[in-house]
Amino acid sequence: MLVWTVLLGSMAEPSLLCVNCARPPPPHRRTWGRCTVCIERNLPSTYYCGEECMNAHWPKHKEYHKEQKQWEKQLLEGGQLDRTRSLAEAQARRAEETGDEFSKRFAAALALMAEADHNTAAKAWRKIITERPEDPVAYHNLAVVLGRSDHFTESALLYLKAIELCEEGTEDWAAAAPAASGLQHAQAT
Image (cartoon, rainbow, N blue to C red; front, side):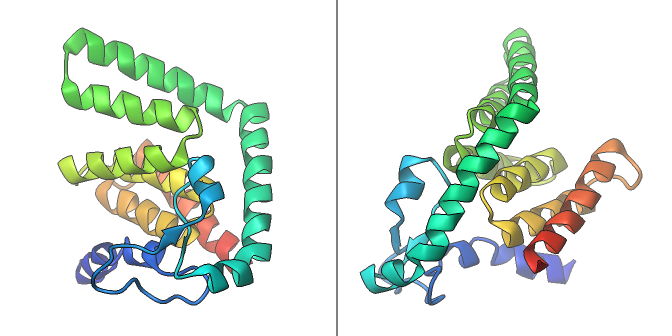
């Protein structure tokens, strides 16, 4: 448990480092400057400490954006976004019937995933996790969003947290376990 607490406590840190030189932002700043293409495409942010690092890393990062376009195309063709949209609509109907505010936020986060608005979806799932840190589904969904945007390390950690919170052998546990393993393999290759 201590290991997870340490990992979870520093979970946001790796994504705030300069992606090229891994330098953290100075104490007077929360983050570095963001990639404008990531901002335009609603992807979780990629940070750079300055123009020199951004220019040095751009050939790799440009490939990331090409992969993102291909990934989105595959999600659309494979029906993943349609399934997520259907889940979001069903959750929204339940939330309206019950009037439960948490269910409404949950449905809204699913809808953001269905629209491939990864950055805003990630923020929504992080807020849900803050409100209900014992909910494994929120960790799983945040892991999905981050995995779709190539933030594999953070995604794998979140899948592991979802596994930890799920009762072993349940459907949720069975969904999270191979996903975490697959991400760890994808990152290694």
